Length: 301
Ligand SMILES: CC(C)(COP(=O)(O)OP(=O)(O)OC[C@H]1O[C@@H](n2cnc3c(N)ncnc32)[C@H](O)[C@@H]1OP(=O)(O)O)[C@@H](O)C(=O)NCCC(=O)NCCS
Image (cartoon, rainbow, N blue to C red; front, side, top):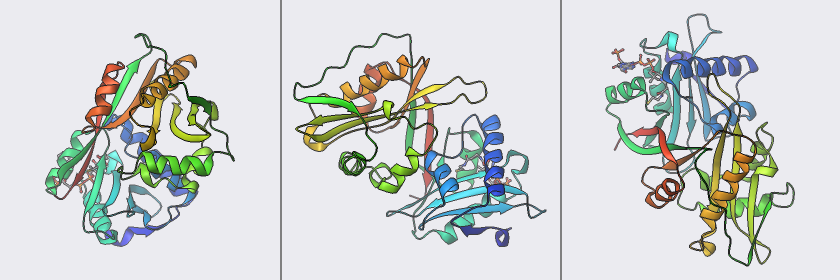
């Protein structure tokens, strides 16, 4: 099996559509998408080293049966790994894991299992991998009451202007998320790739300014309906510069974005938060969010 798994930075349109099919089939079986936005962007635009695609092919060499994405940026490498439900329990997941380990530039390899489904849990335990990190998806229905945002008097709020705000936003994001392993590394290219996505809308990307400096943002996102699930709004990313933290900007920006999403007629709003980020979890619970699903990061301790 290993000979068939070759790391690459680009995949063909045919391979890309097979991976999308694996994703659709996995959602039907596991209940959640096995890949995240960054992986999908790398499939569309290429994965610059140290990010890599690993494609497992079946007996007919055009049939893609499994896929892994490796991100070797930073001190630990993180990966996504998925096998087509029709080809599971045949050793393909194990072969992809061995290929990931061989390709990983770091000793500590971490693997995301979105949705914490039984197959991922059993697979991780068969390799002795421990739960290292949990990311919660929280949701809030539109019919529970929501207060209006209040900002400090010297802060103004406006929406993102492409071309004018790009560089300043990348700096603000890096400062606001300095201790976050993935979000802190969003580059100008990453921002531009996201701006090319069909979901990007500058009218849903809010910036807080004080003395002509960006001090906070709330980037919202609208998910198109998937299967039985209706359209969903997302609190995609909220960040406040360390110099403006503690002024209530996080809460005010959250409220501004949620009101915007409900104003579009969306029935529910969701967000992702680290399970151990007690302050953020408590804020979201006060705003009416409840835990919906859990993403687990596995790894060797
Ligand atoms: C997890 C996943 C990648 C496993 O792929 P796979 O090709 O079925 O894995 P393998 O055949 O190599 O399984 C290796 C071992 O894992 C364990 N395992 C895997 N799936 C299992 C399941 N559904 N139930 C019980 N044990 C399971 C078994 O011990 C298995 O060995 P065995 O078949 O000899 O008993 C696949 O189920 C998947 O794509 N799930 C959704 C994505 C995901 O959760 N990814 C993150 C994984 S940490």
